[in-house]
Length: 136
Image 1 (cartoon, rainbow, N blue to C red):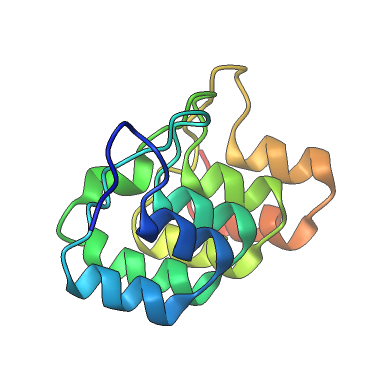
Image 2: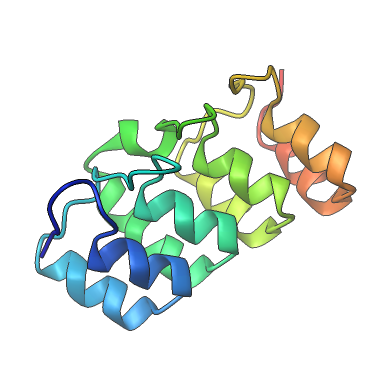
């Protein structure tokens, strides 16, 4: 179920496009959730969060319960799935990630946090969820 050489896996592609039925099927077949792509070093979880595909993200998060580190894994720029969801204003994804115990005040390589990314981009609903989610 996985491609070699760090290329996009079928799971990454399905998560990036929001094909939750395929995400579910691939997860049932034990697709590797830890794999990252070559360029951004993003996981399928990050791709679903970045693009606001809450259903696909939910399917992935149901598996991540067994691997809690995956929720806070960072990409090449040091951004987590929570940061990506907040940066692009995907409030439902932010909520799902907070429920999955994403660390709210983690910083990226540029000292940005999910809260500062959401605020800078003008997403008040995301800001509110992050404040409610335990911002310190």
